Length: 315
Image 1 (cartoon, one colour):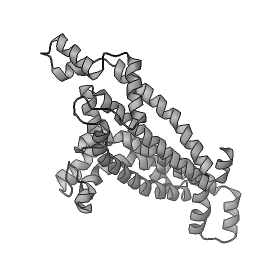
Image 2: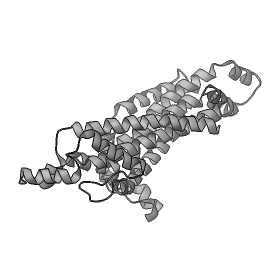
Image 3: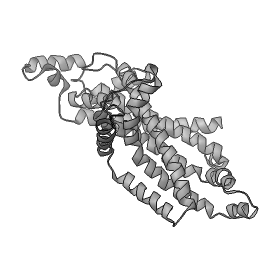
């Protein structure tokens, strides 16, 4: 098992390397000069050139990449051009709300999607199944920002149950935390719940037609035992895959929802960094997000190996 995990960690390194190269090239080939942006339109070309030299932006792009990636390997993501602080500190401060938002949204999506998919599979072709399918289609068609605005209109403006914007961290109390996180998390979760429900339905239907399920039913086992002991265990791999993928989508989708609900997460940091051409922050955010995504896939691969030993043998 340790060899299996080690191989998966090694396989993630090329992915992070490619991400670092691509994001570095995109940022530095995009039109716009952070030195000119910092100094404003009244700055002289001499002042802009002096600041570019101070920031190292006048160096060849390969030299800039080598300096940056050397720092990354030492755990230093560089210094923000505009925030005047370490990128790692800026990302560390603002990634917590994003991670909490994504985790709560993931929990909601799984709690809605998996039971809905199981029920739809057992009621295949009936009105309950059709209702779940229709809800899944609607959930995948509804943009998260539009759903967020609708939730604000209903629960904040209309019913006045929950705040329309802002964020309270968990250390200020679970109640205030949930009151500020539940609406943005729900807006994010609906689309992923729909995707999880569809995958769960398909996977469960496929397993329900296997011979060992028929044998279990012939032995007189009750439906709950068959579902949890035979169906879910053998149909868990594709469900696990879509859950892991949904977490990556939640992290990226949080950028829009954080803007709608004024959550001070990584989304606001990214948008501000892009508007200011703050290259080190953008690179740090993308590399951190990619690392989280690789770690999630590593956890999923390990769970694959636990659920199905044949995966470890093939690896």
